[in-house]
Amino acid sequence: MNGSVAYLVTALGCLVGVAGVVIAVVALRKARSGPRPPAPGDPFRDRDADALRGDPRRLKPGDIVEIRQVPYTVRGSVHLVEGGWSWAEHLLDDAGGVKRWLSVEEDPDLELVLWTGQPSATVTPGAPTLDVDGRRYSWDESGQARYTATEGTGLDPRGTMRYHDYQAPGGARLSFEAYGEAGWEVNLGEKLHRAEVMIYPQSGPEQVS
Image (cartoon, rainbow, N blue to C red; front, side, top):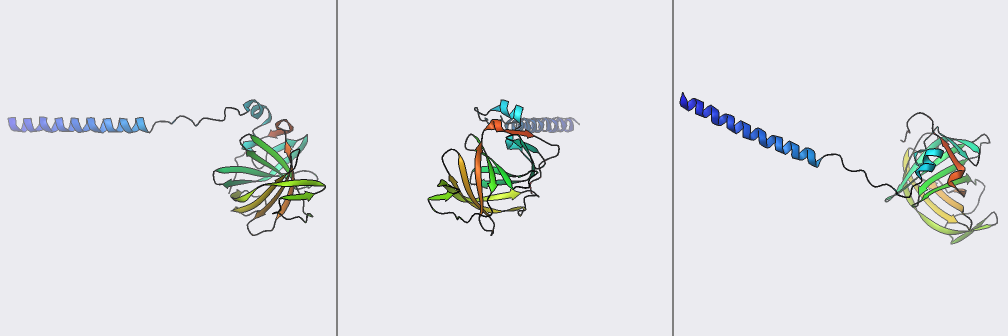
């Protein structure tokens, strides 16, 4: 009888010891996997402008964008990634039916450019300088990016895009883009001031394929 009691006491002590170890391990894991501090944001980001005029980084299909007092609807969006770099291009629709794009990029400051397609242009990329509509553009950069696109852009949901970008004095831009196996599309761009862009977000989540 005494031996049985001693055995039970010993077994109970072992169980209590094991339980203590398990509790300590669980507590240690919780301490290690606790919420991580948020990544530091851009200390120079103009959050007042984002609050008053809308955040271009959050632009999505269906939103209304007013550029230089002209309203546009975002028909679709393309999100591009090249290495550690990413940016977005949004297809805009206006009452006149002119094809325009708004590019949103942090370089590292926020850069907004309004692009207008030039379907009749005959120039091709590659030269150090190009003359278009009486303005001389100098080569800036070129590369290839991966993209995902929403409906409304006319593009495949995923693919690659090649580009050549040129610049002229005063902020004028010239861009060549080729999605997939398609030929070059030519666009002329105007760099926008932040105050020239007002965003009116609409309800509904962004749908990126």
